[in-house]
Length: 240
Image (cartoon, rainbow, N blue to C red; front, side, top):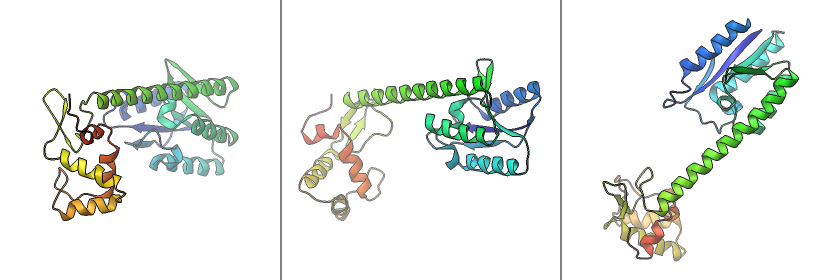
């Protein structure tokens, strides 16, 4: 049987680098008597995109169909579930479709163990693994949101410094004396029912520019309005 490796990598993810994933898959194929076929590797692709909508994921699906039509014995191999699938539904639907076509999926990095979805026990473990992977992903997302909200609530830097604020050497945000009045004007205009496009147009006409020197756009105005700490500027409160 020929196994087609699927790999998903990020430039800053050294733990799951392409070389590491390939080496792991190659060792598995050699030790179990499989031939390793063409490698499909998506780089810098979000895990939240379905495999069929990823550049190389889409090519993998086409290659699997073509090989099966030629009567070849072919399977898919990856090191982890989260390398391949967006969520549990994506995983279940895709793997079940492959099984119906006689295309097994091999997950080979499971603490020294592996699974094969073409077997009943392998399918059972796959379903369990998928649910735990989604649970872990959701937990990480919840923790990330909580941290970001904590930083907002306490006026701490969180990525790009928003318009209307400046950051000191301790990562504390303070109102910018020049930009804060513009933020107040934006909120006042919005309260008067003025559209985002019209607000941006007024600012640009008055020669007011963004921090980078560009003209204001409706999307820029929306980001300013949605940034929660800006309500402190509009209420006249000072940063801590």
